[in-house]
Length: 459
Image (cartoon, rainbow, N blue to C red; front, side, top):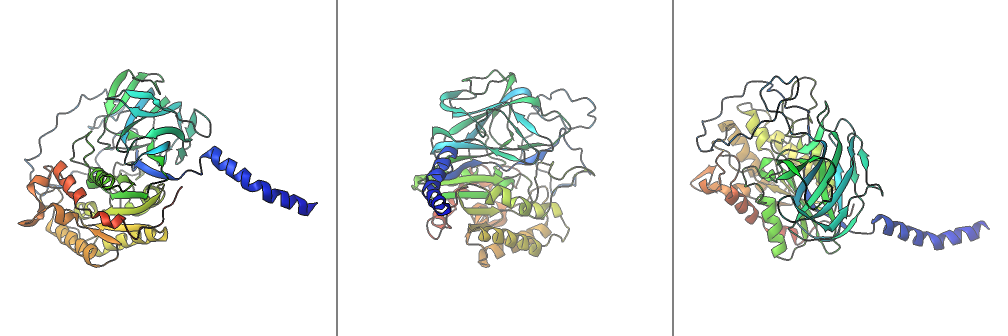
């Protein structure tokens, strides 16, 4: 009887496992089409820990932006920065721009840096129509393990169930999140500060999935979103752009998708190369350290995020279908050190070697990008320039990376290589202009992704 039972299980189990994969969608080959690198944000802005250092030189090129109307400060706030945007019993409609398309979508929500649970009262995905309007029938409600409402524990992420829908490449999706509680509490909220994309806030109530929402405000930050994956069996894989504000797109025109990873995505598709491009840049991010925060404040609760070595697992290795990663990191370690000899160029090179080791353990191809010029930036020093040159020489010649992308050469002034070419400078001597970002995207040799690619993974 025991032998007969074993034989029967041998016949039934493959079918049962197949049915389970069909129900959960795990048989689909998932590849990332969009991502953002989350950070933690406290309830209120952090007071300056120390007076700002004198800039390298006075910048008269950048116009002073018009200050937006400041909302009323919360009770007890006594320092200068205006209060953060918060949500209380409201629907947040967030716009994301795909790289590749697919036949299904799933959304990964993140409370990874939150210090308290967050309840999602309803969620929805659809194609954007225009502005804050959507095409409701193009998508559908987001369910989480079959439930329309979820509470995400602190430090956790949640995957939505797959939604069958046609996701076009290079298209705008709208992700609705109804937040029945409030973020205006003494906790850390998971978000991304510089989305460079206008997102929309509703008046009080649940408007998830409605064609239009009654808007009461806009924000160019994203909240509680981590990534969008698509079912794409014909995709080759995904490329993660891992870096700081120059990867995040600071200085580019908002709502135009003009960051260098956006240009890379368009070039790949134009050549028939079906690869997701995932932007994991964080403004101010460093390889080896975090920004200074007041005593008792969690270092995650700052816009610059945790150091690159600490976040590589979450923001690169955990991406669905990832095959390649491009690393552009280190200028903030250099600049914030000012005249300080540490971290040295060798310290930062050792950090890069650790990123390479992490990628290779997972079978990924990792490409090193040279650091772009920063003469004239507020934190420029000759000591820092010597470090930048040393790191770039190592990236170009050491062969430690699986390939090299020379962003420095693509953007520098050939007559004064420590500076950006004027046309490629956004105005602050640190971040490229739209033209500069295009030059960076155009400088990437697509052959780096055609041959010898690492095997893809489907998570």
